[in-house]
Structure formats: structure tokens, C-alpha cells
Image 1 (tube, helix red, strand yellow):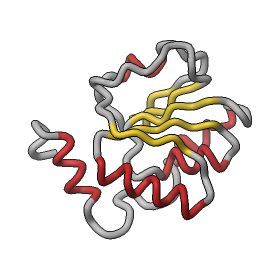
Image 2 (tube, rainbow, N blue to C red; image 1 turned 45 degrees about the vertical axis):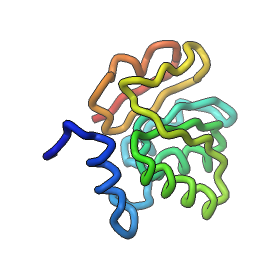
Image 3 (spheres, helix red, strand yellow; image 1 turned 90 degrees about the vertical axis):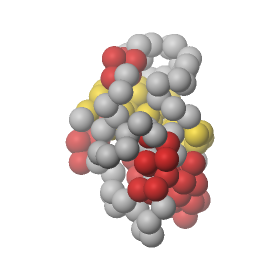
Amino acid sequence: MKNFDDPRGTWNKRFSADGYLFGLAPNKWLQEHAHFWQRGDRVLAVADGEGRNSVWLARQGLRVDAFDISEVGVAKARKLAAEQGAEVDFAVADVAELAWPEALYDGVAAIFSSSRRRRCARGSSRAWCAA
């Protein structure tokens, strides 16, 4: 991707278009593997963009915290969650700088998040990172 010296600006620009950049359906890999978590488990959705994955996880009965570097993406994610009646705790944060608590989550979903992949498994018994 060009201009990735400014990831926040790059993603804000990409998410500024009408509609949802990656659609509304959750990532296929995530759908196929989410059965490892049980209703009520607490999951962190890393670099969640416009919310398609976190909203879907919440609708499966999981307690979901999600963050993304893009304010525009998080605003769209909040809108999607409201429209679909899903409860997700969203935040704007950079994966490289966020210090999420250890041992708080039952799992971490990091779909297409290339930076800091090794952090995904720290403090979680059922964490995945997919590219």
C-alpha cells in the first residue's frame, strides 16, 4: 500500500468511501474457526476496521472489545453495530501502541493485521492471527 508512513491517514482515506470497504460479511476464516469460543467468552478484535468481524462475533454471543487506528473506520463500526443490535466496546487505537491487559481475553482475533502478530497470543488461551 502506498503512503504507509501514515497508516492512520491511509486507513481514514480508504474507509471514507461510501459503503464498507471489505463488505458486511465477516472474514470467512473467522467464521470457520469461531466455534472454538463459547457464548460469553471475551474476545478482542484487533485492527477491526469498519467492524464486520467484531459485530459478527458479538452477534454470536461473545463479549467483544474492538479497536482500529482509523477514526473513520471505528465510526462506521459503531454505526454497523447499532444497526445490527450488537454490543461491542469500540476504541480508536494503534496496534503498535495499545497495551491491552494480559489474561483478560479468552481470545484475540487479528484478521489481516500484519504488525505485532506475536502480541495476539500473549495472555490468551485461544488466540488466532490470520493473514
